[in-house]
Image (cartoon, rainbow, N blue to C red; front, side, top):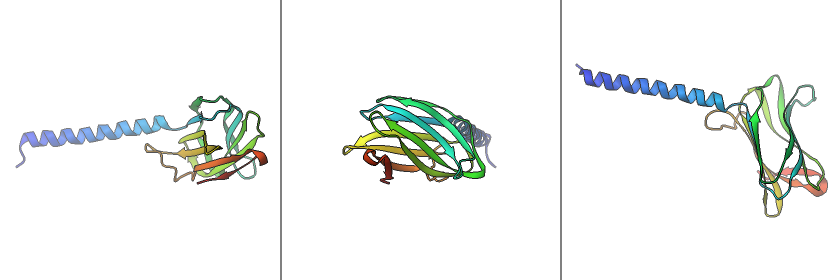
Length: 164
């Protein structure tokens, strides 16, 4: 027969586990639908427009339209991206001061996307680069979006390419 003290300990551990699960679910729900854009370069970004759009351009959801000064970060919330009727990709129009505008696209979104989007502009080996990430869940899983890339900007041709 199990003594009363062991039952209390087991019941307390079970209640603690359920409380932890509830806290994790609440934290995950609060983390969704957020963006964070960081400019770690030596140039201001004079125009940055970020949106999700299908291949035909019929379904578009803009999440940011503004500027991003060097050394600054912009963050905020956006509505859930509804990709249930048609798949969408991520697009960003980026214009650094003194350079031509470059359009970047990345990722593939299906169903509902209510995760977080992160863009980090930085410099490495004399190149201007962009680290993209769109993730869901408590631990930042990007498998649902395929958006986890490093891109470099080719300003001479107003173009870009993937590094990884």
